[in-house]
Image (cartoon, rainbow, N blue to C red):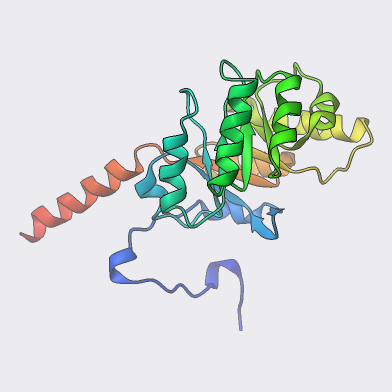
Length: 231
């Protein structure tokens, strides 16, 4: 019997046929464990409809506005997968990020995510307040990796645009140079194609995030076109 990934039986239903599926190539990543649950695919969205109807292993809830506890509350209400919650760190830092981090943990977030400009002191404060892992977002190589880890960072979220694979490779090399564990968790954005995702995985990413922009609208448009043809 062939038990390869391509031949895994799929159980679904008529009403859930339009579930948002992650790119299959992400399954080639090694994965990381978050409180015992293996994570390979991470959907990047704040769309609660998508979060409630996807097959991703986790959801990355970060956005370009000030962290809002009501957004976290809405996501936690519909999500049945682990939540990696953005708590600021740039313009929103210090006590504000710490308080939002505490709220995120209390509302079910399994990890908190600090953005790139986060001061080391803010990382230390968040570490004192929360028990869940702190994930730090890396956007370039202009940072001290060890300083962040010593402050309490437990994983890196790498978002370097088209240069993400190079940045993942740089972080891996820095970890080796510092004599730190080569299996230190790295999450990275995968890009738009299977080739880009594979490049990110081969560079050393344990888990891959993918964006869900426009999925709700595209799915709704496709259904409406079907309804028009049938009626």
